[in-house]
Image (tube, rainbow, N blue to C red; front, side):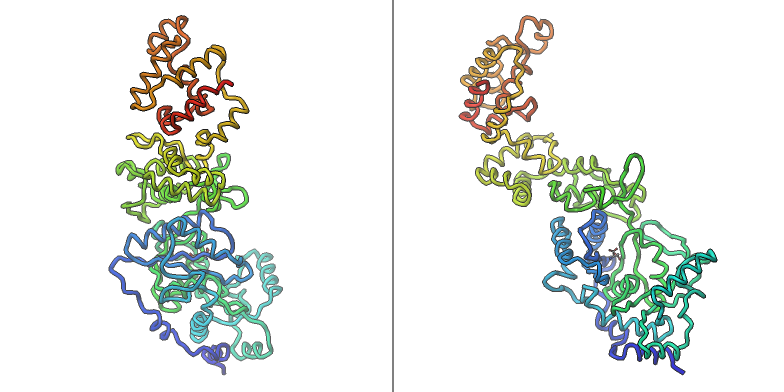
Length: 551
Ligand code: GLU
């Protein structure tokens, strides 16, 4: 008779280590009480999805908040789907969001004592676990070909039973070890399956940090845990890795809830204490009144690269994501009169489950607040970095006169109610282009949007007098007084009440008068503070524009 242990030995003669050896190699972490160990475990199969950024941000935050550890593990066991370069890009993008890691996988080598942090390099470790489960009879080799599995599926369909490899449908579950050995020796291909003792007619309860106690169907599928390529599947790798990396909270997408019973059964087969689980809601989007998942194909905002390319401040995106994550965050912002994550205490039980809706207007709101709260140097550096990456023309302008650009950026910011019209850095180039003579010349060529009701000559002479007589050196009141007195001499009412009472006796009010100045200087009927614009542009440029606007 061939025992389970002998079969295990026959399949994995090269594996000499035991679980105890692994326990000694990866000891419990020494951390203060309450410290959580979290991780982000992406597969390098594509770009960084907004939902993944969300998941990662929470993991990172929970570790930092509890003075614990956050590490990065690369889940690359699905070698067919691995995209070269994807891991590097993921890490770079996370770093851009201030979500870099100290421990884990790095492109130029791991850091930390619990590695390797790349699953494809952990084959030796997984084999120890596989050999153990084989030797205690909780795993077995399965020789089914894909055609065999298809046959099983068809017969289940015909007899209308739950599909899958379980119970009596698990063809090779009850082979005896002699038979197994013979097939192996005959060179039949095999994978290793977990022998589940569950029953899908029973329910089990597990605690989720977000959702509380969840009662769900047991999972009695004998899942594949070890593939013919010598690598484990997600289920097995998750259990081994999070045990030996000493993860305390597994925060991952809610699509893993149905597999959690399998994971818990695996932990129990090893007699290990499972980690806590937090299954994060998938980020949805309202599409013509219907909720649906953010789609890679349809929604540009599904990819994190979109926010970077559009120039949303990363701090604003994070603050926005936190507002999706915790229902009390917005209130906290209002109470604390700031929009930052600093000092906010995240908790899983305040996680909104149905509120995980992606809303561009809300993102804009938080981004505007974030930009408004930034100090000017940070703002300037952020915009410069953005321009360097995505807008060479803007970068050229910034570099040609950084001090000029900084003053432009600072318009209407140094005040109790700073401007809040910039939601993203790509809003800045179009809004500030009039400050640059080449752009202004282009606008002029197309025609400045003057209202010519009062006649070209009248407006030209008014603007000439403004150019020559306006106060350039005083404060805003002195400047405005000078504009008013020149306007009065051209027949404008300086007090709106007078104009309203008797419009026929005036050329217009000060709004109309100053709109000529505005159009002449900025090429537009809307602009931020004229006084600030004039002081930044400087007398010479201002005079030139006022004197030639109607040429
Ligand atoms: N690689 C898995 C995924 O990308 C990780 C899930 C987990 O965090 O355990 O979905």
